[in-house]
Image (cartoon, rainbow, N blue to C red):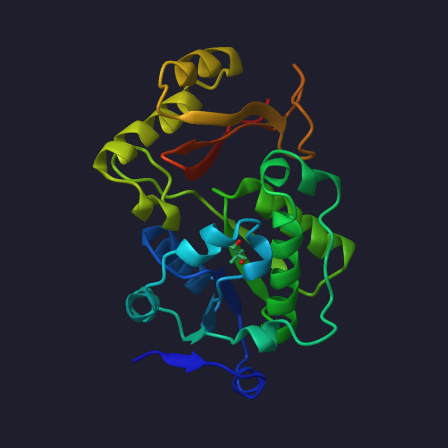
Length: 261
Ligand code: PAF
């Protein structure tokens, strides 16, 4: 069985090369993060903590899938050295530091989920502080999260290097997410419209196609500058198409690089 770390003392005995922060309900996307982590160092720690601060909706927090026994097996098989399973009191002791996400934290995901990114940055900063990894890996599926974490690391000069991991998709092109387990087969088929839309690589056409699937309730679909999160201009070098919406109240997000000029 994989080693489970619970306390600051447990962590003090580790020398973490790569941290893979998760909220559990591990799937093939997380497995790929762990495998990528192994190429960067031997000591790979997967953290599992369902962070209450990043849920603006209490019901969403209560309904978040929890599969801890399976998570431990998946982490072990993928090659993790240990799983960090902290209590809330270790992550958030009295007087813990809250990190504000700033302007980019308030648009797109941040607009629909007020306070979400401040919660994400606060927990990630605490995890870095406790685990002290050399590297930490985050998936590109949550592109705005990845952007804001890199921005935080730069602004606070944190001694950790952030690595991107590519989005893993199922056979229908649906980006893997712990939330997909809330969709039935029909919902998953509907979700494949997201990938088809992104593949068009053109905002106008993408808007038309997404409108043709009324079961997908669009929140936003935009072409952004991946370096700034401003709307892309004609001559923007790194464009990214980003999308979010709901199928039967399950929120899904995705994005795709449109290549450099
Ligand atoms: O992407 C996630 O699973 C979470 O937002 C993270 C980074 C583990 C912070 O709770």
